[in-house]
Length: 314
Ligand code: CP
Image 1 (spheres, helix red, strand yellow):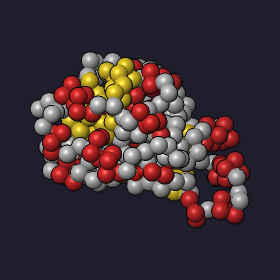
Image 2 (cartoon, helix red, strand yellow; image 1 turned 180 degrees about the horizontal axis):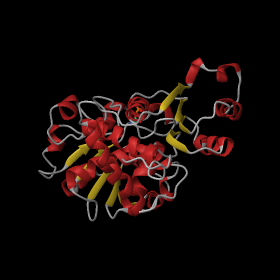
Image 3 (tube, helix red, strand yellow; image 1 turned 60 degrees about the vertical axis):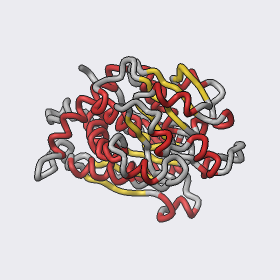
Image 4 (tube, helix red, strand yellow; image 1 turned 120 degrees about the vertical axis):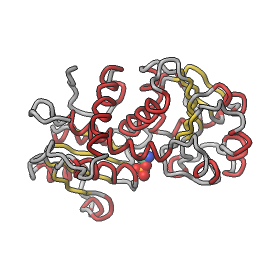
């Protein structure tokens, strides 16, 4: 199947077939990651810039790992160590980086829309590694990969996305992608953290009653409470939030035996999940999600850089 995308910025531009192609490509890269020598020459000669203007552990490290395993050259750039702190604009920064004849830019930024600006300025392929409250497409791909591995597919699957939906870039891309693949998405949140039009983000159901929703779910996707993005939104105390929307042993007893728990990380322990749920529950897929991050980022880099067209194999 042809892959006709230049950027990975808006998951809504990707059809169900496109998403499945990325997941299939990621699955082929899994074999590379299970070898003793976990490296292929697929992107030898390509240069990728990782521009992270906001903190990250998982996304940044797995992009770096994915690029290294594909033999790309990488430049890690961003944050307080750059001339941005001296007042240099994003546009001038990107023009400067482009002078090095680079091939692709990965962008994380606290401003929604920054990856579009980088794509427009550079004319290069851009991957959105999380922009403000907008989207986090590669997080969605790793979530889809993890869910597919655990559940075998998406059609008719009941997925509950729980927490701060209105400030969540994770929900902003996961909801539409799950919906495109045929899953039934329910948003579960306090009224004050629900978006005005949940259907635009793929939700078919909305509720603030977590305990009532839990027994119906195949996947319980816990969002991080993003205190840095609440911007004065009416919010209960963290303790009250945990009582109403946190996962603990009592709530686990309400789940179907085969239901899985996902979380994008980083976890606020004692808020979205208690430590027992995070560390000791078989059904937690959180570390599977982290591993899938390398696979789907290898697949995204490979497909956007036209790996197949250059005669390289996944
Ligand atoms: N899930 C996620 O984006 O985590 P990081 O902020 O650690 O990259």
